[in-house]
Length: 342
Image (cartoon, rainbow, N blue to C red; front, side, top):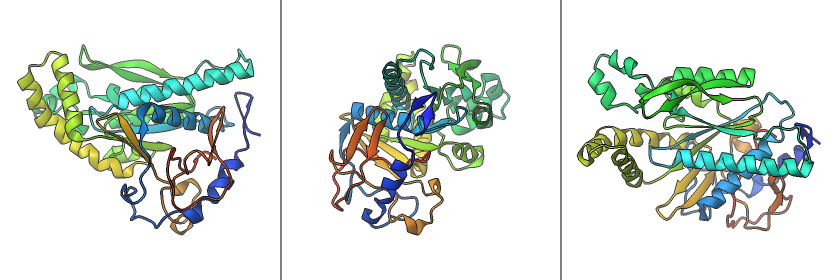
C-alpha cells in the first residue's frame, strides 16, 4: 500500500491492471492530433458541477499516490479569454481541498496540511507597462496587451522548473487596478501536491510556450463558442469602465484574434471540456501514450469511455476502475484517461 503524508492508500497497480483490460475494447484509432468524433462516440452531457466534482476526485486520487513528498502534479489549463478558466480552476481546487479535509477527518489527524492543491494564474506573467513602453511600437504593444508576445513565458517556465526542483516557489500575481504584475505575491508551498496553472497560451507549440507546455503532467482545454466568450469579455470590459464602442473595438482588434489563435492549440490537450450556452459540458479524454512508454499499436484509440454507473466504484480517493468486461457500445457518465502517476 502506498501512503501520502502517512495516509494509507489503495494499491497503485490496481488502476494499471484494469486499464490494460480496456485496450481491446477501444474503437478504431483516430488520426494523430484529432479529437474524438462527437457523432461516433460522444461523452455524455453532464452539468458543470458534476464535471468539477469528477475532476477534483481524479486529481486528488492521483496526488495521493505520490510517495515522494516533493512530487507535484501540475495541470496546464488553457482556453480563450471568457471561457471560464479561472472559475473552473478555482472550483476544482476548492473541491480537491474539501475532499482532502474530509480525508483528514477520517484519519483523525491534526498533523497533516490543511490543503494540498492551489491555482497559479498566468496573469502575473504579463510584461510590465514599462516593458511595453520600450518596444518598437509602444502604442501597438499596449493596444495588443494580452497577445502572447506581451507575456513573459520564460519567467513562467523558470517558475515551474523551480517548483519541480525545489518543491515550492514564489510567483507574481496581477493587479488589475494598477495594470502590472505584483512580484512574489503567490506562494506555492511544498504541501501543495496539485497545482493548476491557468492561462490562455499554455498549450501553444511555438518558442518557449512549447517548452512550457512540456512541463505539465496533464493539459486541459476549455472549449467554448468564440462568440459566447467574446460577449463575456465585452461585458467584462464595460464593467471595468470602458465605453461600449471602445470595448467592441478591443474585442475585434485584440481579443478575438487572440482567441482564434488559442483555439488552434486545443489539439494539444489531453482533456477537452466543452461548455455549452446552457452550462452543460462535454468531457473528452485522450490517452497519453508516453505515460507507459507504449507504442501506438498498444493502444487502439486515444480515448475510452466508461459505461454509465456499472463500471465505477466510488471511494474516498475518487473513482477506480472495476476489472470487468466492457461492452463496445459505450454510454458515458465519467471519462477518465490512463493515470500517468500509476
